[in-house]
Length: 59
Image 1 (cartoon, rainbow, N blue to C red):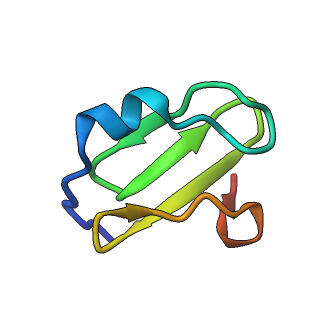
Image 2: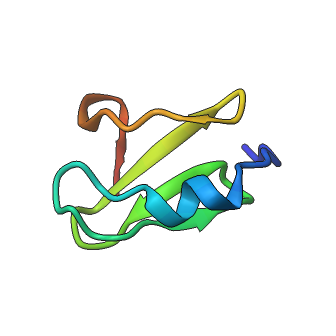
């Protein structure tokens, strides 16, 4: 499923993984913010990152 969702670049600069406190990688094609260290991908819904570990996809 590809969702091309625009996220404010300034927001991406300040968001960190709530589990590891590490920076996130924006996967534009998947519409997710990825935490490699935690193995979690946080969804972006209607342009809003959902930064809840319970809502994240594990990989």
